Image 1 (cartoon, rainbow, N blue to C red):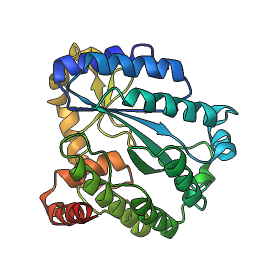
Image 2 (image 1 turned 180 degrees about the vertical axis):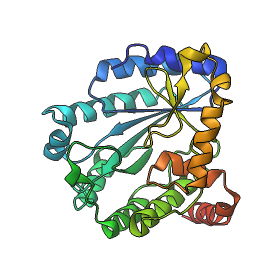
Image 3 (image 1 turned 90 degrees about the horizontal axis):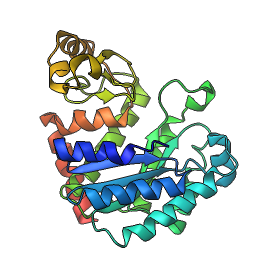
Image 4 (image 1 turned 90 degrees about the vertical axis):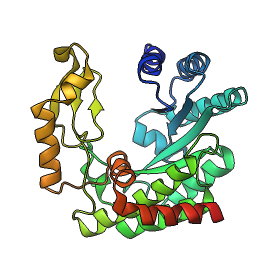
Length: 282
């Protein structure tokens, strides 16, 4: 939907030199999606670009969740168009993300088999529903069903992307994240220290910088610091938010936060090494 998305990525590419850029889309606007992806791939030749499409069910269910009768067909159309583009670029991957909720939790096997057969994405991710949803009922998750689904997912789909460095480590970390999400869901208690506002943060479209997406704890706005992120980051506000998150043993099922928590905590490294070895042996 953002006409300037390619420009934003190119600015980050020029100034911050990221190795990987990942964009999630509902795939509704095929033409604009292709335009943005082509622009990024042409201009940013030394990154690995990942575009992940959200597909939350088969046609009727997906359209119902997305409140659009054409959403499913448009997502598939965009995926197929991107797959043709992938033939020209070695540094481009296409994935699918399905949000696990009470609406689709018992149909996930059917959804995964459809995606595998008809799309065969470079990677498939299950993201647990979070945040303040309009329909509170969809967060009534069957914990053991979640466990069964992620176990089946790892059998149906290959471990992950294979054309950028450390992709096997990412796949191992994804598996470890699923284990922690399951434990948080089941036991409803702290599992690992959280580094939100310490090692990662959120920049909103309005320029607000948040320590955590879920807590919505604003550190400041980029405009008030002349767009100098370093100045904003080394403030008392940021330090206090980080300290409170660690002191209060904050926990959640947000996969993005947990990813950082596992990768940068040495106590997880033995499990991570075991996951990595299991992936290599597949």
